[in-house]
Image 1: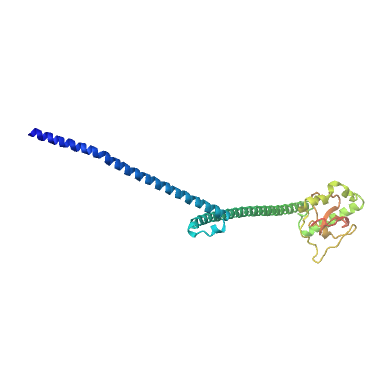
Image 2: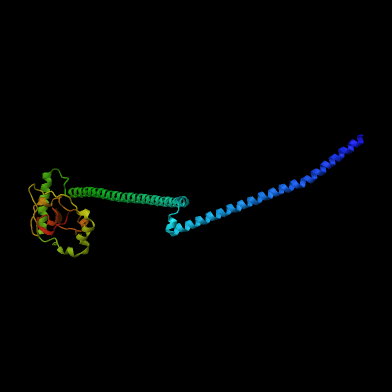
Length: 307
């Protein structure tokens, strides 16, 4: 009994399995058919979408070409919904170009301003340097003039001292160291009278005025190169109310006009010939006179000798 039950159960299981196997191909075929239909519909929908996109692209290209070329009047009257995206793109492009132009102009303006600032800085620097050079030149010129003035003062001081020493030596030689001024005048008067008696006899040579023909006595050229030596300073006349008179050869002067105060001790310093005998070079205002100190007669004259 139990064996029969087992057989029956086994047979039922085999039958169920056979039925299941028979039902499976039909379900698979149905599922495959449904899947094929869905795939075909999907492919058709996709192709249709592609075709629509192509058409829209073609329409956009046509609208762009018409907008660039002006297009017919009918195209200009197209609905706003179709031309709005194109116009927005064109406006955005124009705005970008305008912004780029503005940026370029701003950059050019900044470049020009920076160049102008650099040029102004360079000009100011050059002006400062030019002013500094001018200031240095002025300072050097002032320093040279100050040095020249100092040199002239030192030279005049040295000349005055030398003249004083020479006059002192001459006064010493001539007997100035004698007691009083009256004794000195008496001694000088006696000596002058004695020498005048000696020279009246013709014991001395007459003054030769041909010395101007000798080149070494060209005092004018020497004065042009050494003007400071001929700035003798102010002339103090021996008399208070005495004024300048133009003297000539043969005029007789008083002894007070050719004293040691007015004598030129070193004639060669002014490129004048050396004197001998009773002759002495004497300053008379800006003129130079050659005077016979024993007679007071003027033997030679140079006008406008000093400054």
